[in-house]
Amino acid sequence: MKKGDLYFPGKEFKKRAWLKDKSIYKKAEKNPVKFWEELAKELKWSKKWTEVFSHKPPYFEWFKNGKINITENALDENLKKRGEKPALIWEPELTEEKAKILTYKELSKEVNKFANALKKLGVKKGNRVGIYLPMIPEVIIAMLACARIGAVHTLVFSAFSPAALKIRLQDTEAKILITADGYYRRGKVINLKENADAGIEETKVEKVIVVKRAKNEIFWEERRDIWWDEVIENQPDFCQPEIMDSEDLLFILYTSGSTGKPKGCEHTCGGYAVQAKFTGKWIFDWKEDDIFWSMADIGWITGHTYNCYSPLLNGVTFLIFEGAPDWPTPHRWAEIIEKYGVTVFYTAPTAIRMFEKYNGKISESYKFETLRLLGSVGEPFDEAAWQWYFEKIGKKRCPIVDTWWQTETGGILITSLPGIGPFKPSFTGLAFPGVKVDILDDRGKSVRAGKEGNLVLLPPFAPGLFRGIYKNPQKYLETYWTQYGEKIYFTSDAALHDKNGLIRIVGRVDDVIKVAGHRITTGELESAISLHEDITECAVIGKKDEIKGEVPVAFIVSKKTKKPVEQIKKEVIEEIRKEIGPIALPKEVYLVEDLPKTRSGKIMRRILKRLFTGEDLGDLSTLSNPQSVEEVKKVIGL
Ligand code: WT7
Image (cartoon, rainbow, N blue to C red; front, side, top):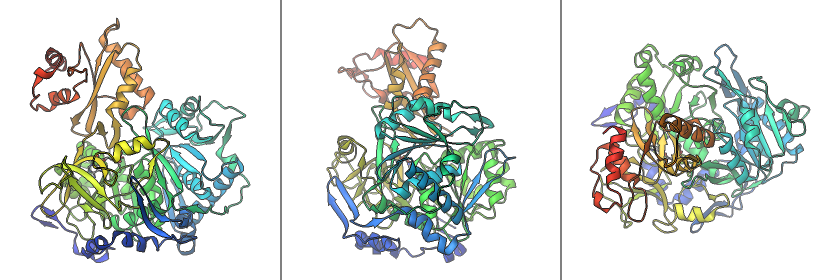
């Protein structure tokens, strides 16, 4: 498979692949709008569009005036051909508990029943519905039921805190929240309902639908709470799909925003469906007999697109797992692959590095004979982890697709196609056919090979790219359409390309840090920390981490506190747990006298960052308090 540092798909793989000829790129490039239109025709629409792509910068539309319901494509269309085929396999965390398998017919029935239940509760097209559920089949059913009736789902990652839930519910003004009593995490029951109860305070939520999952004891508000099983009781198992405009909202998914307020990314029905379908089909090369497992939680965009919509749009069997991949033993993930005969596996470099660290040997005792393709997403994929994944998991047989995309893009935009290649460690590949990208310098000129610049998307973008930030057009304009004008989408990622045009993602150029593939802004962490009354100033930076890629490190200034240092550090960590959740906890908290600042009072995070990388600190004489740097150095032990 190897050729220089480039790898190519094996003969067997190529033979069966959907795409094996690179002429697809040329064909798409000639007329990307027409290219996407041809793909769109393969979905079922109740009315055809009148215009394929229309552009009023910074806004654009796809398949204008087309009418579609994504669930008709994801469910009903499959019933004819593969009603008895498993759609969804659910693996619970507890090994003694039985897995659940839902065929297309069964899944469809559950979705229709729940859709009718939502209707009965008064949910109408366009209403927002909050979903705060763990990885259980009901989460998929709930999303699809919303889509069935044209309600806009907003998922909130189940490990997010009540405060994080609240801010999202307030922004969307959801009147219904779907949650569960609890779920299992590393053998312990997490009382999710308790978080939900706290999260809905000061929101417009009127009804809470509760899935009975862990059977833990929960608080119950008679007038407000209602069991899932009761709402679906006696509901008919068919619900007429709501006819949606291509540009109607399908869902809102929040992503970390700099000022502490998350941004609600708006995704629409038609374009998203087309991109979700074909990126999955071609990048994961799905065939009728594949079993796909993506490890991402449904609360992230990867979960939305590739643990729900995309496999269903392609009639594929996919697996969702409730627990942690390293519990109860470090090789749980490997057992799941073997147990179900997973053929295509999708995860993040952090997980791969963790597997390597904790079970380097174990992976050798698994043959992984069913695997034929591996994927990666969410953060830069370093060469060492790539090689380990390739040799120990893929046994040098499976192509690796490293996929670049964002919550905003809705689907994968840059990758190598598995039947074509080439695969190059630490490079993600080429723009997906029909997608135009470039790497620009600060003046807007394309950079030459090997030189870093800003990754941008050019019109016609891709049909699944988000359409706006919910209730915040200003932020949409500022964040994405200002650096290079209103016709060029700014990704906030630095990238470079090699002489073959293969793209390497270098990392974020804004204040986003990718912790274990999760997106957190330092601003969001800083606002959480600032809520602590003893903290007068703080700064958060990302520091390189062997496993997680990056981890947050917090510097705090507390002029008045009388508490012991360890106490205040603990409280800061608690503050973040309370405001955001456990994924964002800083690895270290340093209490310092002062933070390096410019004369105008701006905190120089760059200097703090460089203290860890060992890079040159630059000219410190421009600081208003250069002596602070020495103090910080001492505190961090330099
Ligand atoms: C950011 C988006 C989209 C799925 C999960 C992340 C980084 C994403 C890669 C990759 C290097 C990557 C970028 C991007 N990123 N994929 N293959 N190689 N970096 O979605 O949470 O919205 O984060 O993740 O920095 O901008 P997200």
